[in-house]
Length: 149
Image (cartoon, rainbow, N blue to C red; front, side, top):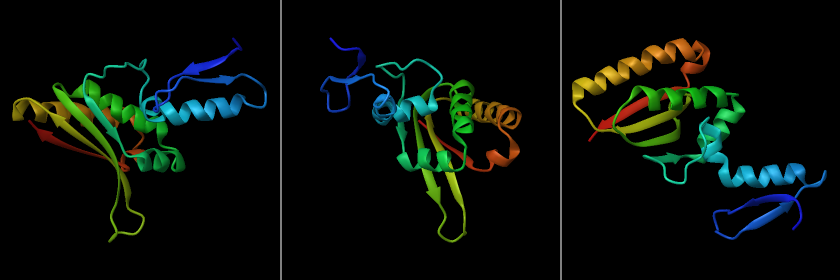
């Protein structure tokens, strides 16, 4: 068997990409296309069974790449995960306001279970850590909304 990368892409066929100087970048690109949304937001090892549902708008990743916000995107997602308890889902969306020129944002919509007073504490904890860990000039690009279940 040739040396290479073995993985199961979304169409569930096993694929082998051989390691050669010429195809190394192509191999990396192909794998990134298949795993991009998970890898882009997680410093953890990928789990085949996520604890909660996470949806990504591919435009959110494109916007963060363009604005050099990928590190902050990872941090914000991580802070949400650490600050909130009872997360049922996280949706990460790219939003544009057509009435305000240049208004582009990434919105984290979190569905969370719990008492309203506890969820307000989680939000406060998140915002305090956000101010400490994400530079001010980058914070403005990220929005948080949550729904109680």
